Image 1 (cartoon, one colour):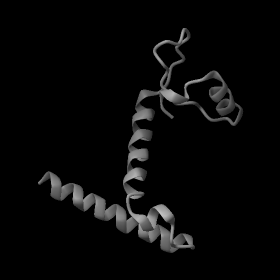
Image 2 (image 1 turned 90 degrees about the horizontal axis):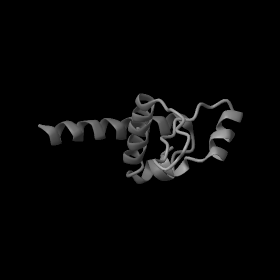
Image 3 (image 1 turned 135 degrees about the vertical axis):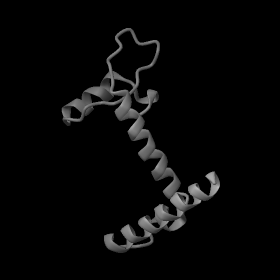
Image 4 (image 1 turned 90 degrees about the vertical axis):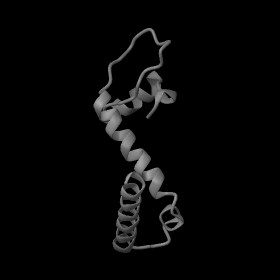
Length: 90
């Protein structure tokens, strides 16, 4: 979650479900609860990857009904994205 979700109510609900909140705090908060910056960065990378995957219509709408073909589709799209990244950086 990002700073927009920084509220005590959301943090309490996460803790009630035994989830450790990794939410950066807003600058105007009096009490600044700490958060794991490295874990937040890794989570952000995963979120951006999911965003890139969803640019492909078949992944975003999940045309495939079964898990195995859908996983294969996601793997093909991920390989395409990886290859496109290497071509753009070369």
